[in-house]
Amino acid sequence: MAQSRILRRAGLAVSLGVTALLLSGCSIDNKVLRFGWPSGVTPQATRMRELWTWSIIAALAMGALVWGLIFWAVIFHRKKKDSPEFPRQTAYNVPLELAYTAVPFVIISVLFYFTVVVQSHVLEKTDNPDVVVDVTAFQWNWKFGYRSIDLGDGAGRYDGVDQAAQAAVQPKPVEEGELPGPLHGKYPQDLSYLRYDTIETVGTSEEIPILVLPTGKRIQFDLASADVIHAFWVPEFLFKRDVLPNPKENHSDNVFQISEIEREGAFVGRCAEMCGTFHSMMNFEVRAVTPEKFAQYIELRTPEEEGGQGLTTAEALQAIGESPVATSTSPFTTDRGYQQASGVDGI
Ligand SMILES: [Cu+2]
Image: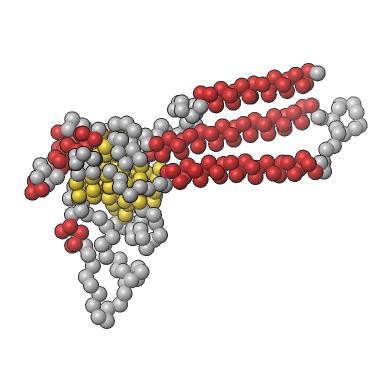
């Protein structure tokens, strides 16, 4: 029968297509199979991207099946033109109805299972990351500090907490008769939860902050905001995390890790939580360099009194043969009179 031959051929084409996809598989990081996502630079990002790729393939396969069934019914089971009879009615087919109630649950379970597996891989933390970075977000920029570094072999070992600055923000002990503050007993001006390190990079309106990191090393990010809620987002990490003030009191898990950055390069970072007037200009750059260059960078940036050279971010980047300014994004003007001054009227 012609009809069944068409169906058989269609089935064959679909299964051949799926097999080809399975064989070429998710290891091929090409633009089509990424379905709009950027190419990740961490193993965590790759796992998430693979989950995305397979979820889309599953959804498309399901879509093709459903559309196929709809068109099959529409085309081959219409009411015949000159016949008063309806096509054969198949309502109240209990096994069929049970099946198509049960199948979606199976689909959801499979998607749920793989989501949980990938999620726990992405959220995994180990005790001794090679580099710990303190990220402080504020309206409207970023500050990055190195809290601790241990690249192994004693190279680049460094303990970076700025004890004096940290001590300066410790709140005064509560005096007798003083009322507790409104934030879990703390006062709004109490910024002792923020981190201060010896080597820091602070962004300004003129300078995009560059967070220099080594490739191939486990990196931990500790996030905190000095004011409102921001979000730390590096598209190539395929990962965002909200940055809150008082993260502990706000029940935010403000720590995450990546097991490594897989290649050198400049990757743009953005604030992904609407945080006020200049939110859209709150960009930064992750600059991934080799561990050797990174160790050199840290030494150049270490203050002179601690045996380093006390260079700025830009100077130290230049010294290790890297661009001293961000290459993935550029500063925006934050001068509100700018458009008028440049002759654009009416805004
Ligand atoms: Cu922000």
